[in-house]
Length: 365
Image (cartoon, rainbow, N blue to C red; front, side, top):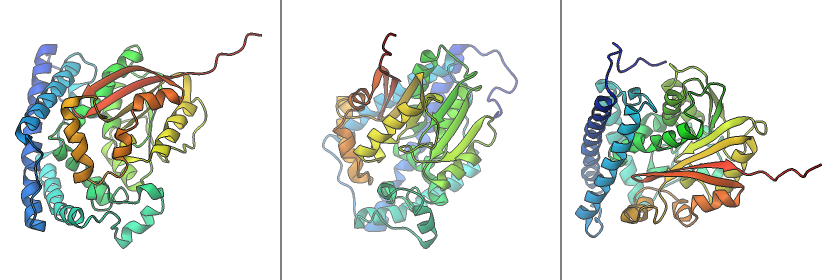
């Protein structure tokens, strides 16, 4: 287990922990926001172009930051209540952080060029072999990033890039599913439970789930060998986490074998038919009394004040399936495919849905 942020076991009050967590989240957000402001300058330098801002941009950003603050209030309260430990806020070292930032800004030149040229199928010779391992729909430069989801270079930069994009709020958005899952599982520590994560990426949410449910066994799956390699490295200090390269829509796992199947930021990046297959596969591998949890992007009118951000996101960052995702509410699709939604939480630009599988009633003998 990772070293605690409270190594001396001080008896800290929940309120003190909550306020400290809120302050840390604010500082973290200020750091990543400052870094994000460098990107328009870099893009102008790289391409000679400047993005046109939406109408009433200042007011819209003010409203967006008010939503981030509310997200942090909820996240900090959950930490104060002990639903997950303050260790989820543990930052990387300043030297490693600075090195990654340098690499992100360096890669930003190539991202800016691809965006201008609308180049979304650009891969090095070294990446071609990895591309063969992932489905056709994913063989593209998501977010115009170098290597798409096929390269270790992309995996190394991904989390930092995402945090810059969301002003340091991505981790808190990931964690909005944990509180309702703790409640749904009777405030369990994970003893005797088996969790399956599909589309685990670099393992960021995997680590948070392990800290919230320390005794659970987690199987983290992803289509990308490079991203799974990064996840193994990131989570090497945790026990009872297994890694499996697999497609979320075609899991090589037995029926009714997991207590929870969950994902984060997966569904908006896959085609509509694949989304339905992922939901059906999740139901197949779930125990009859299990849960499915999906944490993904807001959809239209989940928070009308942020509809404008949902409209410009796929324009600025290559997201070919995002418009279709917006037109098919997850809650409706989940219930059409044999689940009942039992909880929903919204935090800034993300929402978490908790659902239970519905099975035909057995006929009486």
